[in-house]
Length: 270
Length: 94
Image 1: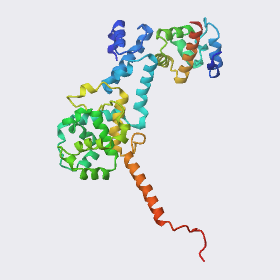
Image 2: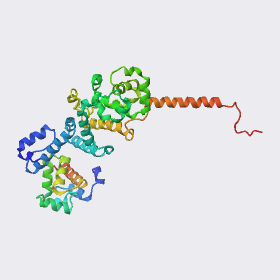
Image 3: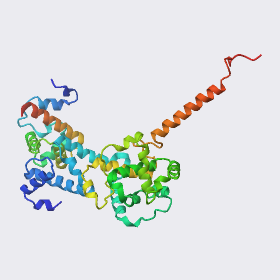
Image 4: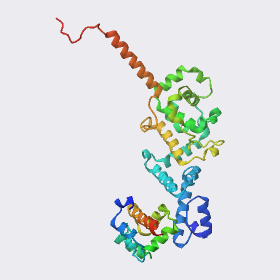
């Protein structure tokens, strides 16, 4: 932070403009504050994806709101330590080529090594949908009952015709049940934790809330529904509808089958 | 006749009712004895100086709150009261 002291007032002012930090004149009494602002901005920028530039590009009121939301989200959102998650994902995704094991039980792999699987599954046609979509699929797949995953993997052999294990399967599977899961498709959210070399630069323009969402996805994968609360369902919607329908039909069937004519069941038998 | 008067203190209303002139910084809403003393020690002994700084920050509430906290240790509520007071005063007289 001391290096800012060496800058002249004009240079400081230029930096404030560059970062879109609303500011007044840089004079003696305001200088210290603005130095601090620039310092905070730059340190925050290195912590979060560079896309947070977006959160600063608004009028004062919004700036303070975005500022607040950044800070609030880091602190209070489901008590998740996002900084750690961000760094964690960054470091694991660097171990890119290490994960080669596609022959092992793909479901188990999907469940246990959520973060590690992200980069390895990024090869091939995933890029069409973007890493976000992929990540959200993962989140959902990990949220679904493990048995459901296994069953589907067994009964949909056509998915196996693709190469490499579960990640591809998991990736394609949701296409068939896309309708009820619309909640997962809101907007081009980008995972901040999949810095795939070829595509990552173009995906870093999204603002912090997206990153937060992505982090929730990672967390959900590990937390197994402990924290999905508002984000997903243990059982997907269409399955619930089917179950409900089945149950209703069963009840109806049972009722009609058991119906004993027009007798009043309350009449005493004599 | 502003509907904010229900939630403002008497100090606020007194301050906003007239030009501040040479009023002490302790006349500002949110600034009591303790904060007032600290501000005076830092050289801000008149309310108009705090106003001046507020204006210099282009009335940015967040910046001003940070500055106030830095200069005298005002907490969020005290800053909010002070800012509200200054804002209202500006609306009326600036």
